[in-house]
Image 1 (tube, rainbow, N blue to C red):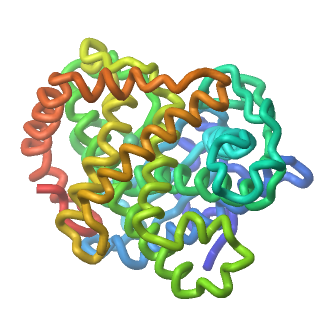
Image 2: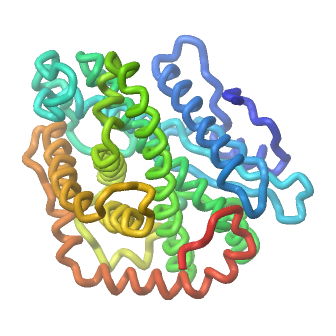
Length: 385
Ligand SMILES: [Zn+2]
């Protein structure tokens, strides 16, 4: 497997985009977060190979990926022009959010009351997780790295961070695999598909963009479940080898627990940029569905997946019952690191807002319109109906 930080192939257009974005990350000597980035790069390289070899079954094409030297929460997906004889796809993830996710999960596990069943929480001290506010950019906020004292808790936190990072990567892959990137090139005159941008200049295109984002989230959740299922089977079939590896065992020993941990990680990732209010009025100006809508879609998507795919051997109803506790746990943990009471206002606002169905129906209607066009570009699998 190729873990090199260098791209196997590129083109002048991609090189120019990479330069504007901040350039590709190459590990410097002696830089503190480098080991985390090295490990992340290795894990994402594994996902890249998996995607290239098994998920691009309709229109095969090489996938390149790289970490981008920029701190803000951002990522992008690129595909070369359709007439390019050396067609290639590219996924770029900023290094900032990778550090932020590690930092946040490590801080959560640095609080003894959080996940007290994992490792030895007595090694943690009460004030260590402290974070004055949730942020998508811990570096800009000046919040330094902080690691749990207990090595098992540290490994557990790292794996949760890794799950959230893989969600970001697979979201970009979803844009490529489902033909979104070709679509915005051909139909909307974009050179690539950016994540963070000001949607206010988009006029009537916002709903199309939000629909693509909703589809990329759904695609990523489905692929996250497939990855989690594979890991769960590997860990549970080698359980003796994992006696010393209790952090991974706690996450992957039982698939029902695995999916709760996957849901928890992705929920926390969205929670970092949730403004705690479901604002229907702002939605038309956004490039993405609001964070609350996105985190509110995690459980229904998994529920539906488990209902239609018996391979997962888990009851959708059991998943939903357990997810209530997972959500509650996530809100408690967000409070614990900030030294505040749990604040589930956002999710209650969302859950009690009948307008979320109106919005969902808008996305579904838009999907019906763009789906036939996307079908011309799909790399693999089947688009949602
Ligand atoms: Zn996206």
